[in-house]
Image: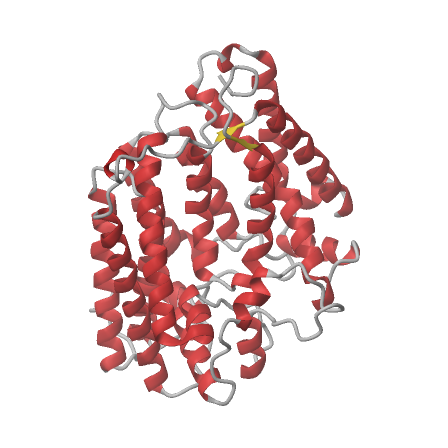
Length: 452
């Protein structure tokens, strides 16, 4: 339907490669929807590729319009599309290799490792931490009312709190991360406990704590004050925690994800700005919003290729190091790398440098095409292995405190942010989530420590 629309775009090699990428990712997403097993990590990967690297760029190719200028030659755009398609094939190869790896007792008679569980006392500590951190976050920004105004007000509140500008990027990440992540994780664990335990549903203390956490998340994790991709993370994580075994809900989530991403998302920035600065989308074409807003991933990958070939070349892990050690302040590390999207945007001379940098571009600028393909192969392998383990353990008959039943839905939702990039912006919440999960994790399964 998209490809046959009329527009000013050229029907050249880049167009037909984009059409092939869209068809490939659409076929793989359809396979995820129709599979008998719920594959959360692989499903979210193909949902992102189909919407952000497939249909939306195809609409841009048809109309000849892009949300972010592509400054290099057409050959760089063709190379970017080809590299994305190569990365997708490598991801599939990794997932295929994982399918043929034996598990459990088939591995030389070894038993599967003990499951990681949630420690009941430490969960209470995480809950207290969630209320404290979110409380500080709310008070720093001027009270709960700010969270129901606009994202512009939130950014202004962070600036007034004294954590802004380049040297405050780590401070911003920690403030927003600790204000939102512990609250979400605590809510997910309590939700899993209530869904899978009849005993928990008879305990007023558990129900009251869940209600208080739900109200807290309504303030700090609502769609008004948070980026759309973060709210998508919250919704995916909650949905798959509430419905841990429903194949129908899994299929509906992936199918509706396409509708939300391609039709609703381009119009869903109503709360990004206040009344004075908001400019509604005015269009008579269903394709035009996809060409004018949000989906700049293919174009930014092409710009990254042009940027590297203009002189800097590949960075051989430097950008990745900046993401891993994001918390190190620039006063300590003066040459600390900037966001890849910001770096390329500054080179392009754009006013708005809040640009995406998809995982393909992040890996390519650091490690080249072979490194990019190898890492994506590894990601596909790990995603397939985790999906298989999740399918075995995330059931209603599994213990309520099974940590993988909470972690995989959360990672599936957050993968949209990781895949979109830049990685440096996404690192803060990842690090805080790891700290929180390490706090509550245990291998002990006795009655005093386990959720029942």
